Structure formats: C-alpha cells, structure tokens
Image (tube, rainbow, N blue to C red; front, side):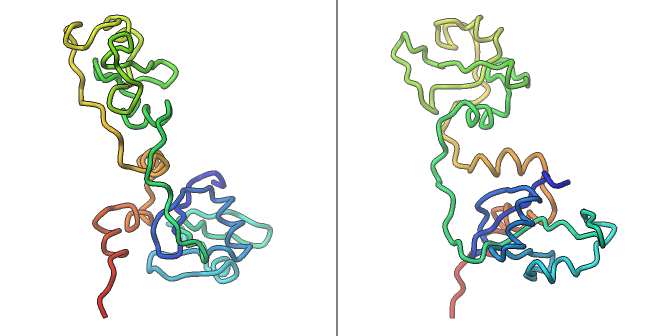
Length: 198
C-alpha cells in the first residue's frame, strides 16, 4: 500500500507528478502539502489523520488507528508545471508505442522488443521520434535494412513526437484512481484551470 500512487498537484491544482503513499505522507507531515478529498477540501496532516478511515477507502494501520490514504495532494508553494518536452528515450518510445510491435501489432515485454528505424540509418534515416518505432525481433529481422514498403510490411501508425507527460501516461493508465479523474481528464482539467472572469 505504501508504494501505490498519489497524484501531486501544484498550487494551482495542475498535475505535476505521481508519488508514493509513503512520500505523500512525508510531505503532509512536513507541512509542504495538503491532502485533497473528493469534495475538494484541503487537510493538513493532523486533520487528515483525524478523519475516520471508511471501508471504501484505502488505509494504513498505525499503532493507535488506521489512517486513510490520500490519493491527491496539493503542494502549497509550488506552481510550476513539468517540462512539456518529452525526452527521446527507449522507455518513452516503448510507452508511446504501448510495448506493441508497430509491424505485427503484438504486445511484448520490453525485454523482447527492439527499436527499429523506419527509414534505415544506412539510407540516411535519422534517430528521432518520427523515424523510430518498437519492433519485435522477428519483424526487425524480416525488415532488415529495407523500408517497410520494400519489405512488404505496414506500420500500425506513423511515429510522431508524443505530446503527453510520460509519468502520467504510463502510471495513470495502470492505476487511475477515481480521485485523479478531475485533474487528468482534459475536460475536467479545463474546468478546474480555466481563468475566471471578475
């Protein structure tokens, strides 16, 4: 339970990170963050730990009581957003392609995937988001140093630079808690972050 996810919001309620329950409790206890409940009320560590842990909420046990696990916390003095640029890395390419071979369409464990240059480097293909895809070993060997058209193969989708923050894409898809939805859904986020007129 201590290693499950907690969504971290900046001071203006925009998601900036996903951390562990252990780290979230540390931030609450230090007074750096406050817990946010389903009614969007803020709680410091003392008031949060005084809440009764209901049966429909995750909780952790202490010597004297059970404390409800916060699924969303708000940093009190941080208003920045994570960098919008997604690093060009093996991990992020696998995340973009969802561990799926872009030629045969089968999902694999990451250890069973290769990266393939759509236009081979020997033909002047560059190593960037628009020319590198996940490929299983079998498809990579079949394609060899040819273009997909020359090898009689088709790409599932044209590779592009992603516009998401990898932390939210990979983790949020695995364990999206209902408390996260107002901040990760584009429609709900627009509602909460739109500038209000006087």
